Length: 272
Image 1 (spheres, helix red, strand yellow):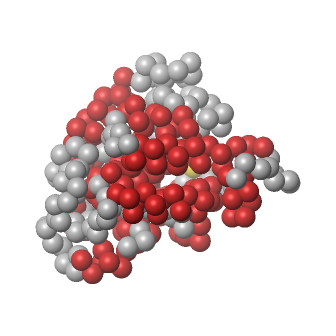
Image 2 (tube, one colour):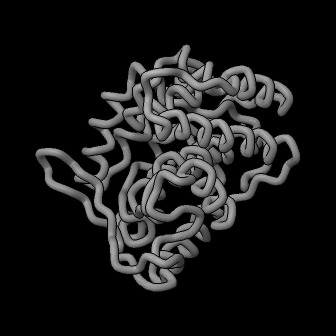
Image 3 (tube, helix red, strand yellow):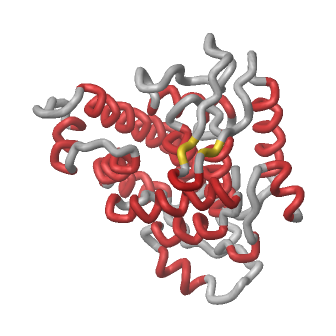
């Protein structure tokens, strides 16, 4: 796949040879145990990326079913939405029902953007709103505007089908997961919750393939936001891919297993 094809299908380019190909894998029970144990941290990290003001102890309190004073109900609702999406992912992976499909993508958007977005759970244009096209603010670089919202989303659906077909040919689960996240974030299939929905799909791909999920630590959110702005501006994913790999809890092991631009792969798991 050359640069021109990458741009046409995904809207951005990246150096495929630079993506690590040998990734530590683990028994599924270990993956599930870790994700369940770390769920509060995952929810907190995701909420910080959305500028949610709740502290980690407050997030834990809300996830335990209690309200906290001094915050908007919408801030607490966002935490509950993220928790529901985490539970859905846990259920999908536990029951071997996770799939890289539009249906699943829309389900996670329905969960994370419930009563927060203009509409949720389907692509822009498939609901009542057909005139508004959202944009991503890039600060000093202006704004990024995705594909125009159209009734029934014919272009968005075609775009997604073509990209999914290409992704299904990838034999590197890490590359597939990271590219899907950045693709979903760039194309803005939903009115809101695009990065959150895409991250859940990214982690679904990883966990399905017995690889630990990725969370961007709250302390790195500023760096994450800066790099995402450059990604939207330059349409090159190399910096973001390297950053997300660095955020993986086994980043050091991945680095040691991939000392050179190797084309080898551990061959374990089933790539979806």
